[in-house]
Amino acid sequence: MSRIGRLPVAVPAGVQVDGRAILDGWGAPTAVVNNAGVFEPGGVVDLSPDAFRSQIDVNLTSAFVVTR
Image 1 (cartoon, rainbow, N blue to C red):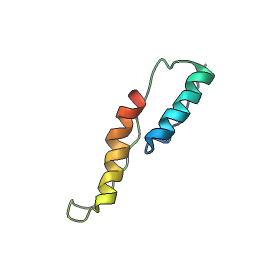
Image 2 (tube, one colour):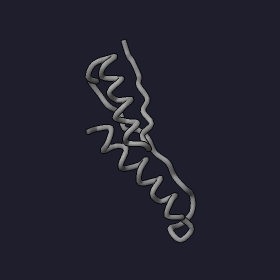
Image 3 (cartoon, one colour):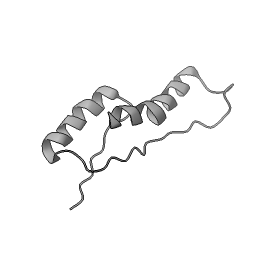
Image 4 (cartoon, rainbow, N blue to C red):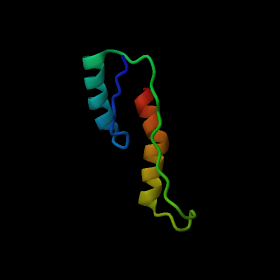
């Protein structure tokens, strides 16, 4: 039987809290899919520092935090 858990990957503290709930309720996963991603159209000149940070947090940091 397949069970899917979803985590708020842009907020590392949320991943820890929700991840703990998943572990407590279902046990250790046999697989983890780090499939979160966002894209802000435009070039680097048009990208605000906040938009850049958001992309880094969702696209890169979240994979690290979830896998950890």
